[in-house]
Length: 325
Image (tube, rainbow, N blue to C red; front, side, top):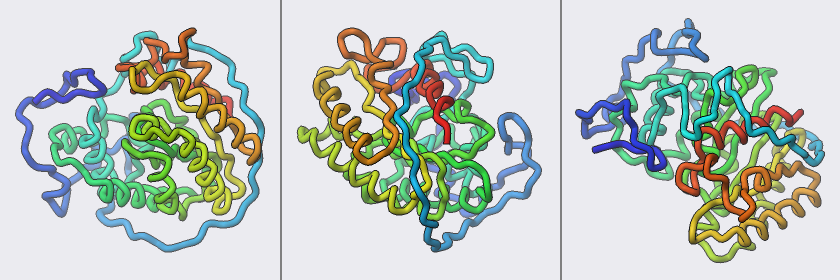
């Protein structure tokens, strides 16, 4: 079976794949110190096998707001690596949701933080993964990751990515290494589903929460007005728990598909911007940056008209740098 990632063949795979998920079929995974890296620097701390969930309530804080007006720069470089090729990535990384889930559970069992590792970490444990995780299993993973990062956060600056498949696949190497990052996104989440799992990271103390959600609603539902309604409730819930956290509502990105017309996205984004203004949170208009004159996503920023290319993520990441706490 040939593994693909958003329609792109995965060339660095082991052709003799097994039929079992090594993490789910073994209770003790022998992870060696030489496999642990942070941006290429080996870890020296001991590994852990279990993480406990501590029930705590977050502190009450105050929100700050301003409208973000990013500067457009499509000539992006990540850590000195050019992204001129749309699908270029300097790393071997998980190419399927199954592989990504397997990698992240392995990281948890090693007592480490997923977003602090290189994208190819623990490759031998995820490259042959075949067992599809359930939504419940994904939610448990996100909860464990949030609990793990809360133990290590101390006074460090914490960013949270919250959304669907677009945020889920945000490349690790593009996350600022001088801050902590927690990715709480799920592949097929809609705004309604995200509303039900905001408590998974309740033990953390985020400084910035980047919210991008709604594309799956447009794919699976015809009631587009539910998107701004649900996002308004998401903002309210986050605001109640983390009043000092800066909330960045990001526009829905343009697509190039026959089933999501540009007019639908423009209409939803209009309401999202209005809600952000009314609630005093930030609105990041990426739609106008990613679209062409026809309202479709620029070809070099996507792999299939829906998912982002490496260059698409590089462009998105360039605006994170302009957002100040």
